[in-house]
Amino acid sequence: MMNYDSLKNVYGNFQLPKAEVLVEGKSFGENRAGMLIDEVRVELSCGFEAAEAVFCITGCVDLDTGMYKTKELKPFILLGSYVLIKMGYRSGTKEVFRGFISRTEFVNEDGTPSVEVTSVDVKGIMMANTYARQLKARYVSDAVRELFDKPSYQELSARGIIGKLDIPPTPDKTRGEADKNLVSIEMVSESDYEFAVRWARRSGCEFYTSLGTVRFRKARSDEKTYFTLGPGDGMTQYRISYDVSPLAGKAEIRGMEDGRGEVIKAKKKISRRISLGNYAGKLVDQSEKIYIDSTLRSKEEAAERLEYLAERTAYRFGTFECECVGVPELLPGRYIEVEGLGSPADNRFYVEEVLHSMDSLSGYRCRIKGRTDKLKD
Image 1 (cartoon, rainbow, N blue to C red):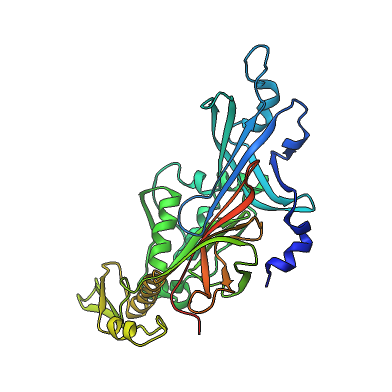
Image 2: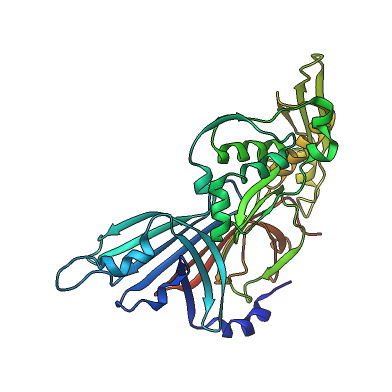
C-alpha cells in the first residue's frame, strides 16, 4: 500500500511538477517553435462516462503575422491522433491517460491566443454508429469481448490505445444460464457504448478504461487498499459526509418469468455500521426498498441483481471529496484509506472520480471523489 511518505522519495519531495504529452509517439517537449503546454487536465472515472484529457498550447501564434504556427502545431492537433499523457515530477512521471484527439479549438478569450486539444478514451469510438444485430455470444462477458473484435478496435489495439481487455466471466456465464434458457443477446438500434452500459447495469458491473485496459467487471471487486491520505499526508482540502436518508434496512426485487407467468423475487436484509450510536440503525432498519425489474429470468439472477442494487444504494451513505498533492498513482476503481482525522471521519473509500490537473499557478494537484457504504470498524 502506498502512502505520502513512501512517494516523497520517489517524486523528490513533490518538487518541480512535470507533464509529458506524446502524440503519435512524438513528445511535445521536443518542439522548437517556442510553444508551451500551459495547462493539462485529465478527468478519470470508473463510472460509465468516457475519460477525457485537455491540454492547452500557448506561444502558438507568430507575433509578426498573427497567424497560428500551423506547421509546428500540426503533429499535435490532428483529430484521431493517439495521445499518451504522463504526469509527475522531474524525478519521474507515470502514465495517467491514453486516448485519441477528439476536438481541437483555437481560442482567444483573454488576449492570449491558444489551442485547446481534447482527447477521449476508447469509449469515444464506442459511442459512434448504431447497430441492430444479434451477437454470436450467449453470455454477457463474451458479448462484450465480441464487440472488440471489430476492425476499428483492432486498429486501436495495434496503435496502443487499447492495451488489453479485463473482462472476467459475468454471473450468467458462471451459472451457465444461456444453456438453460437459450438466451440470445441482441443489439437493438444502439451503439457499442450503449450496449455495454446496458448490460453492465443489468449485470452489476463497472465499465471503464484505465491506462489502456478496458474493464468490464463486478462493481468494486478490487478489494485491495492502494493508498492512504491524511491532513499531514498530502491532503490539503476535504469534505467527508455521511447521510442515512438514501438507506434502507431491507430490499426486495420482483419480476415476472416469461414462460410460466410466475413472479420472480428475492429479498435481502441490509446491515452495516452507519453510526457511532444506535439511533440511525434503528431508523434505517424500519425502511424497505422495492425494485421492479421486468428483465429478470431466474431466482438466481434476481438475487444477484438485488445484491448489486442494494450495494449501489448503500454506497450513497458516505461521500469523500478532497484535493491533494498530485500523485499519478491515484486512479478510479481503487480503494483508499483516510487517516489522521479521528473517528468517524477516518474511513475507507472507493474512488470513483479523479481529476489530475497541472498549471503554472497551482502546480500538480489531484481532486478525488469517493464513496463508502459504512463506517470503519
